[in-house]
Image 1: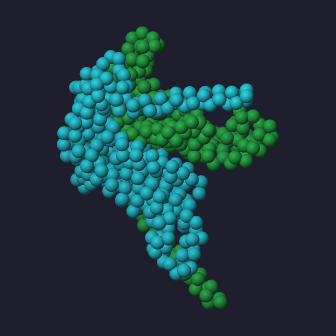
Image 2 (image 1 turned 90 degrees about the horizontal axis):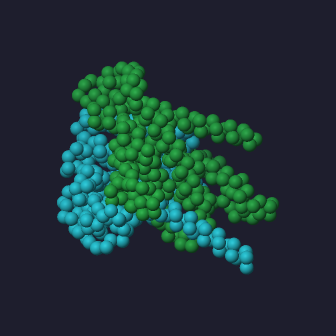
Image 3 (image 1 turned 180 degrees about the horizontal axis):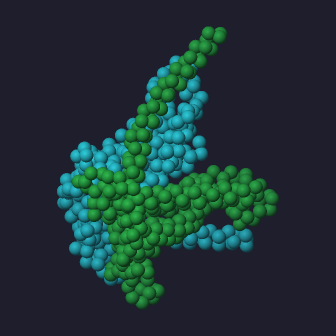
Length: 302
Length: 279
């Protein structure tokens, strides 16, 4: 009896050792394929690396250079504003879509299927589609707005300094809405129906039910999807680069576009990596603020 | 009666809101569809209509005659397929180890996977470019496959980890007691059960590579190695030279695999991404 037990234990131990053998290649793989390139990328931001020249550590020279170029403030103000407007718009539209899709609505399956389109379209095809709408001469937007006398003359959506930012934001929002809406929908579908019944019995109306039961239920999904959206928009390159080239002037210039220009147009790879590092700092600050505010709110609840 | 009317009213309001939001979601795609089947003259008309007055297959015909476009499709297909296989095969044992093993490294590895999603693309681009230059793989499909695999591994790992964690550990233990080795248990017991999950992770690596543009723009130079995205980029450059119809047709074709595959697999993806973080 004890013999058998020990044998079983031995078996389990052996399988544990085998599992550990799985962990070592995993660790090595992540180290080589993911951690090392990232750390190297961060390090290159502190060097003067240019193609065909030896890599030399130059401390904070890149950052002084970036600061002196005068672009730093502009690009982070641009991306900050664009992020703020996009994230709020994305959340509102996604939540509306998720709630509608979660309720009894005719043709639900069809709406759900159509919602996938912006998510699945390649970024570059996305741009070609939106260009046809924003085209100042033969685009749909101008044609419709003129038809209903909402504007007096055609607007240059991508080159007008007042509109270029919002043109780019529209494309951001369009691309991100399906993923967030479907994620929120998946979570909404997990809200147990008896909670609704209990809330109704307790005299909650639909607004209260939504505010105190549904929204808190969505908290975690909201946090995950919105952090992903922030990172996606930070990393988005094609929307600005192909629609506005960061212009007019530098109205839609973002860190990503500037980093690409520095690296792959001017061959200034140290600078490009330095921009990457400033983006890392930026994302870290955002996440830090987010965690802080979450903690503060939890304390407020308690 | 009045209650029924109120309900009807509500339904209509909901439907109207849905139609409004869906117009935003679908309109650009409809424009692309309409451009595909229009003559160039009609595309440049000042009063555009979604329904073409004169229906034509000219754009598609012109596109199909462009041999380079097909090379682009073929390149993209090859790259995406190999990326999908590599990413899945590399990530699967790792996902198993992370999901099932309690060890000190586990939280570190998981933390890194989450963190790596927050790293800007450009931070990876520069060292990878440097590396590809050293091994003389810039402007090559092999180099791009390598980059795409590295780039898609964190997401693939995260998704797979969620699916492995969702597999009941009791079944695994039962198999172990029946004398099943870990490898046989994995291939014979677990894999058939989590196959939809593995397929989902693979499909998303595939579409990620198929749609990717930024790395391709940075690393590819010559026509021979252009992917579909780069071909589209070339057509966008030509737009205005009465090539809008062809660009629309190409965009439509490039979008189809993603739309079709996502329609089947997005459910598992959303579940995997949000569940994976909880477990």
